[in-house]
Image 1 (cartoon, rainbow, N blue to C red):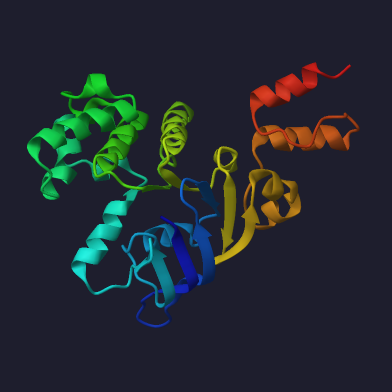
Image 2: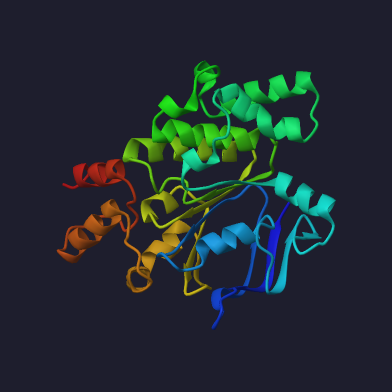
Length: 277
């Protein structure tokens, strides 16, 4: 179920001059892929995310999901698109509506008219998928940030989406919480769910199959993590930072230390240094 952008532009209305957040973007998100969309604040990446499931409609151009346009005036078609492309946002507290976790997970399927027996199965699946089964009857408000975000993901999973868009979903979390959410994303991707991760943390991009960099509403880089990180000058020019291990390795290479030019994690850096003779 590909998501396709064809010469898409989006303008936020304003009293005087409209703000153009996305400019003439054409790209396709393939089924089962793990795509990371990076960019500094104001680059247009979150607007791009909201265009993916019809929360926003293009000012010009077209966004299609499984061949259906998000600009449809048919409510049923738009509803179907939003079921296929689930979104999790930055602040997990803003996404919670119930005082008990299993009720939170059940809310979406209940509104879809899913039979009661199936709702129970979906709750079991969703909580198991994010590793939160033991919290089923707890209140979400006593959980850590990472746990809350995993519950927010579970609530979307209960709707059985084919694509999961994580829009800055790790931005407010500590490193442990970020790690929890990213691990869930990787596991879901292995199960066949397409993952679109929106972030400004370049170390998160190392987990993706494909990295798209945005700047001033445009796609300015697009490739594998290795291809994108290799162009260090462009990464810095677009207001981003290389993953810390890669930056350290780059400096060591400048000093004549023969490290391989593909190090994205602390463990890879440690292993590479240990291999030096």
